[in-house]
Length: 123
Image (cartoon, rainbow, N blue to C red; front, top):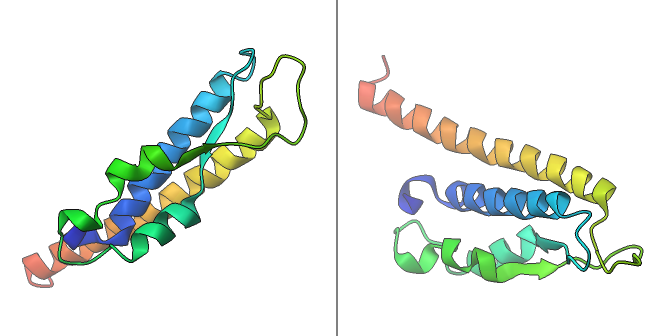
């Protein structure tokens, strides 16, 4: 599928993983000693950029390494219970990540629509 959708597919998978991590952070906002995690989208995609190709080889896939790119979030304020989740910051990140996911999804949908148009012969 990478040969068909290119970077848009990888962006969808990465944003999906990030939304999951942010959701976990929000769900554990009251858990003592919970450490918030996040993915730096630019560094993951940038590191994989040299490996991405339209040939569809497994070297271009970054989905297996996404989980390894999750890092701990440095809290703006330390809490007494050791929890590093800033609920307001996490809500903002969740909203941004959701919007970025929607944009990547629109690119994939557009690619599907244009391919279907070619298959149908422009009808």
